[in-house]
Length: 258
Image (cartoon, rainbow, N blue to C red; front, side, top):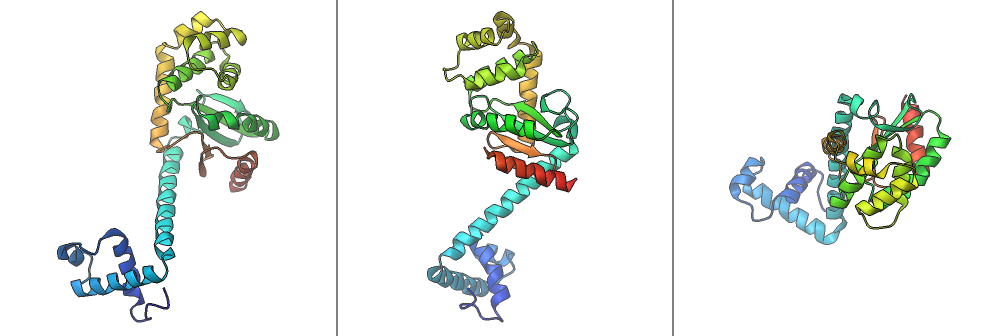
């Protein structure tokens, strides 16, 4: 790009690059005027960009990548602001199931769907992480984002919590490969020592339904796109399944940030 744009014209051309990404070459003259350029200036800028892209197509892909990175950063910043403004609903929650140290200073929130294969995959790493980090408070937020079967499993997990068996039921349910059904839920409930009739009844309990809805509202407040999603303190959001080492590194950054 430096080879194609003279030093005297470079500022104008660079500004035109942004316009080129947003406006087609057939845009109305009124829009060109709104951008601050005359039709002649705009035509010159478009021609420079066309020649540059013909010579080095990576310019466009680099620009798109930069725009995507900026959008992702802005989205993360907005999500973390929502977490910072409402800590009692996230890392400081006292109503969700907590793995690890309930009073730990390293606060992490996981949004997960019980039918998500990536959420299932990360379960063992989370157990390992909790065992390795005595100051970790891991807040679990189950959300049904994969359809009716996820709703059924989410309500079953929350209902198991009413019998003080959230974690054992969660692990057994997420490890079971069978298709979702009330018979499956009943079988797993019996396996972990729960009252299956009560569990099925509690799945319709207004508290259970409200808890699932509340978790979904919180997920929307951070514009969550998929599961699992990890909120590391109020400093970082990690979307998607990550390795144990990556989670451990994120905790290290959180510890250093104080």
